[in-house]
Image (cartoon, rainbow, N blue to C red; front, side, top):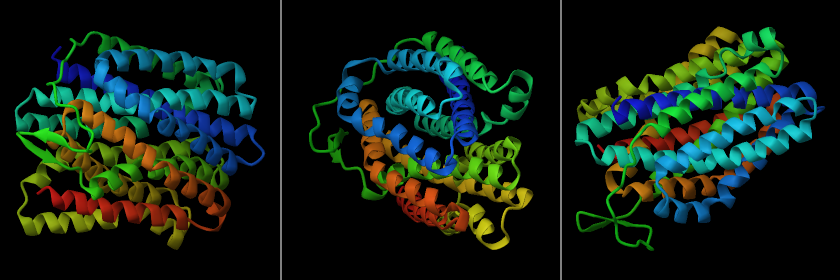
Length: 382
């Protein structure tokens, strides 16, 4: 099995486990806590805090540790933590405590995974590297959102603990696939203290709009992870509704593997039109919520189209890093952007927790901002 295919398969199983685990945690918090919305906000904020705390240490770690080995150890830790939820599902504070540890490992893996991607892409011709980037991003987004699809069936078959057992199994498969990959050494680079990386003798800065696009990714994901269970719980009482909307945004994000290649072949005028359409797509589900209210199938279509636009903008930002930065620097920049996004995440999580019943203003504004900044990044590299 060639490294690229093994890497994509490992990514798929890992992200499916993430998606199932995250939705299971959110649903159990809503089910057991007195104030479900605020519990979700606190969980999101406390869970993202590790992204800030580990950033300085992760920078050095990515320079000194093989990114493949780091990902294997991290996935192994997650499978143990997934099992740790099972005995504490009736205690919201205990769920929050275990979730903090889960997200500590998760955000460490975010940078390590991107560093591994950059290392693989660095050994490929440019066209194949672009394909790998698009497919990996599509696999990541689709896995995260599709992972929650079977949660309703799993809970019916085996109770509240069953999704956590299944997530553990998915992590095992991912770890085995990663462990079977050969060690991949990235090309050495000179010490970099300026925020720039030598590329072909030229110092290449990371543009502000690329950093901001990446910094807004997790605040937007946090709003999705809060909105779907909150809306499903309030308007239908069925976790299957949250899973379906998760699936639709995941399918939209999964379509980027094909659509990004098509975008690159468009003429300048066609690219501008495509980016304009994507700007309209990204906040679409929240526009629908504000205008027609909670209607499952229109929302499903809206989330699908939002996923298409969101993932295309994110792929563009990642491509900008991969093509201009050394592999270990890609991971370091991702860590930094996650840390920069923390104050934004805190603000939007609390604001949405106290205002969600009055309308989707907070996610609408956040997704519109991401769309505008992402469009600047997408147009800036073509």
